[in-house]
Length: 426
Image 1: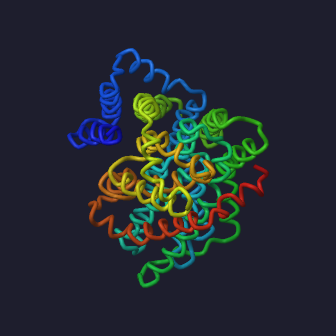
Image 2 (image 1 turned 135 degrees about the horizontal axis):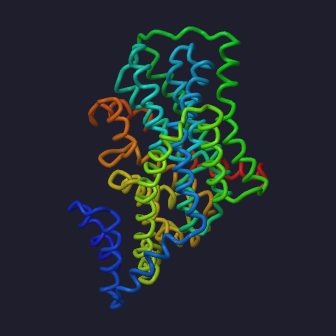
Image 3 (image 1 turned 90 degrees about the vertical axis):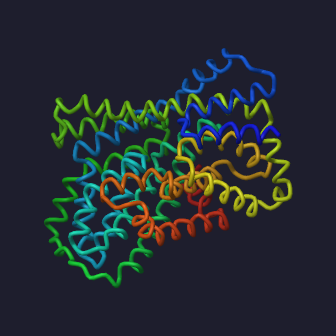
């Protein structure tokens, strides 16, 4: 009954168009009233405590870094480097998109920011060269979801804070699965684009490639600084966010000089708007998370999943299927905020490594960004490309299937996540 009240109080307001943040509070209040615990002060206290977290301070800094990179020329230089290296081979612009997505993901940690950058820079170029518009949009959308998987990742930060899991371990665990998705996208692109007729950009000389590399070296140094700093304990993930923001500001304003002081205020405002949305969701989710614990919703879920508790693979497959369904109707951030406190006790009860589960969970949520009707990344690419959702979904489908196959491989072979982390000494 508790689960029914919680889900009903959450889903009905969302179906009526109530913003998710307020729906989260409504579901929490409904549970409080059912349990006879209603107190407005408890609601307010949990809202305040929900956003009062040192690790969560990384979120606004990484979001600011992403805005600065797109405005200050760092993203464009990454794309130019990819063009110089692989743009001339058959289907090369598609490989440019995937290569650039991997680099951009190690800069911003946001799929939406990467989608905006890739869409604006590469979509017109790929369509002009003869690639199918829908397939091009599908590839760019699918490549963008690597953003929350390869560190730094805002999704990992949220999951780590709520689930009490090491964010540094999550960051390191996401590298290899993110690269696996990139390889799967490359293979899929090679298969679907081989029959297309398109113009190939000329092969660049060694001098041009060297110039593109030198021009982008400042942007490429950022992920190196972050990964090395986290690996050797130079700074925490929160401090890494500060490093990313300050470094990107320095490069954009002093080195590349593409972000004049006059534009700085607009960049800060844009980052602040996105941050306010994310942090308000986090704060409101704290209310329902507290009530979920008090009402022992995870205990009821454990009872429901009891037949699968002895088989970790079947349990993970069932949870991943559930998250896929939820991801079609809910954005990534609220899904993490709502489901992490519910699923974490189940995972621990079944003896599953929370870091390993976190990688699967974030990949699954990332895939949800390219599933209709809510798919945020799809909406970004629709806006850039002027395609409608139906056209874009036809283009994204082969790449969506490839990413789901990678997710299944990671469920069936946990060593693909745990072994690379063990090699790194964590």
